[in-house]
Length: 275
Image 1 (cartoon, rainbow, N blue to C red):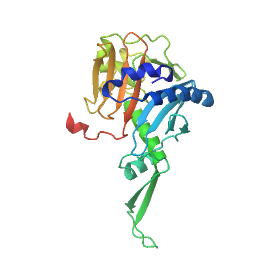
Image 2: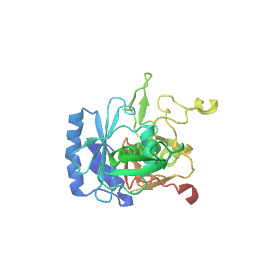
Image 3: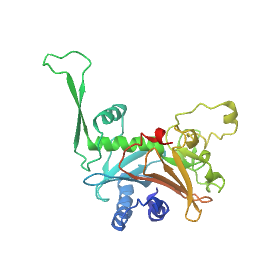
Image 4: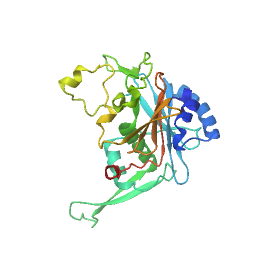
């Protein structure tokens, strides 16, 4: 959610009980302004909070001219001092999936270790195990990347893609209507499209300038999103059942929208058996 409307946005997603303290809000209101200035971001979003056993990670996201490509994630333990997270790679994701199974500790330098048996015969030293080591900062970067890829949400028309491929905020977006906001087809994943191929009948009804993202209704398994209207039916709220803790809001007939994640960073792998 945009740092300029942080107070307002947090009130709209507080229905789950997950929110920030007054001290944390005050600290973020100041530090995010400085973050935008120091890193020369076009705008800064408060992404959320990942809970740890000893301390919590506060995540912010800075965006440049291209809202999709020019993204940088940062973390803080005190809402004031921020550090850049490295971009997640395939090898990092693979190592984290093997080595890090427990809760976050809250220490960026904490080392997770996993011993993997080598498929080959014992080497000259007689060792047949390979140790995979991952520090928690890498795990944090991978977790934020995966949640961003699988659960970031924007309403249809909120962003526009230029002929040059640059994705920017659609200044003419006035919000979804009440009827549109009640359909999952009106909400997109704000990540690179994974299902770009569509039938001729589907393409005929699409606008390539705004329909360049994946629709939430195509998610597998079906039923991985909960859509409700709250605050006297004035706010549309989407909650991910795959990444418990991610909440998206949109005020129909206004451009106000955003999402936040407050959780332990664990994916709900039992969801297919719960539906």
